Length: 79
Image (cartoon, rainbow, N blue to C red; front, side):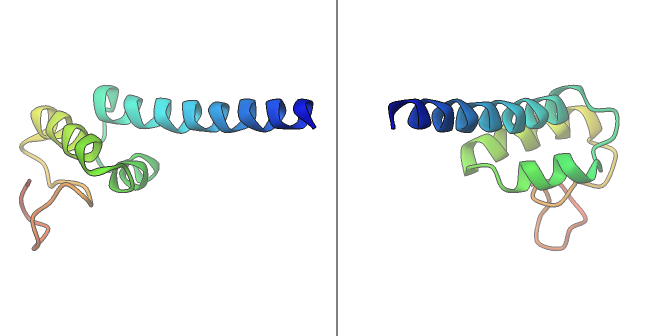
């Protein structure tokens, strides 16, 4: 039983690390703010992380349309 819990814990930590790493790469090192996977991950992050990610994207791509989750209600401007 203990071994099963250890395996499950390691699997959960690995999934969180992969998803978190992919999100971090999207908001800090992307060449395209409209990357579908990055947009989806960012839109589902907790509010403080999403706001930080949107601020990073805005600093790099202020002249482009914002991705879903970083736009005002009409979708035409950054939050």
